[in-house]
Length: 387
Image (tube, rainbow, N blue to C red; front, side, top):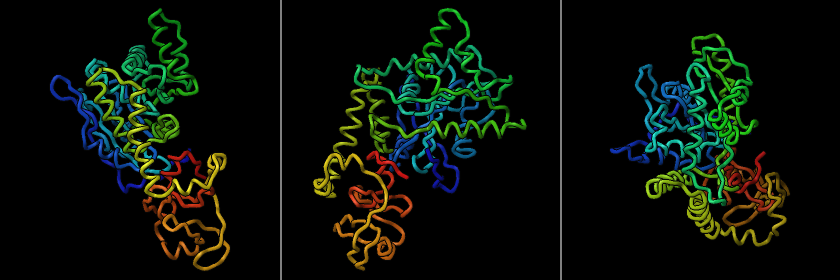
């Protein structure tokens, strides 16, 4: 997966996403929700969870930009609920959730924090302080037990999530295989059950171990860069089924999760799938297709041809200059124009043939079946590989 370049000049400030009112009633915060909703394309969510006062907010800020999340060295927890910061980039926007830690996240009323992390994050960064203790293993297993609030009914499934187990400010020397040794350790029945939960949730190919020393240590930068690279690699675009989810769909999903937990105390994946795929994607997409005449455009292609959609060059006779050259169809009038003429007509931005939005030239590609220029967000939504 290619890492994108941040589109923002400075580190983005974090925003509240989920907080608790009287009687620990969870409330989704519009400020954070709106920031996610505005993201136009694939979303790559990372959740930082684990022990309270273990440095989660500090590590999360290192991903997004120094100072993005509030940090201090007091013994009082800084983060309650979930804060979010967004690094807009391509091919997917990095959305970082800084989740509360300690015993609060394990209480019944705060279990929504764990449920949100389980449903939304494609990379889960579990942070413990000082050493990989048995208490840390138990805390991770208890988080997995909270997933019982997510009801699959045999017709839905959680997206495969990667675990990055991080010992922050480590005081011991660990090998890269430390997590495997911990999970394989001979324990009593309860210990074996807890390790079985972790192993079942995160197979060996989707779990990694990292230790990060205090930032005053000489090897801090090297170890941090290794963890940073692994997080960016593990933070894949969020999908529901085969659908790349946009910010608007993630925001709707969060709102629906809040409503389901408040009303039923559980999240039904089939219900969530129907809500996201039918209400927030399929219905708007059908309307979009009809309004942009894409339905008429696709009538001329067989299913076999549509299955081979890919980006690349398209040749034809330019309607304006008359030369045979590479170019693409105008989405409004369906006439073919060469690239040189397109650069004269529209030197900075182009209109996507699907969503009708204008994007800078580098943020789109020509698709060979439709013979039109599409933005990267739409291409990824359609499951078309981008070179």
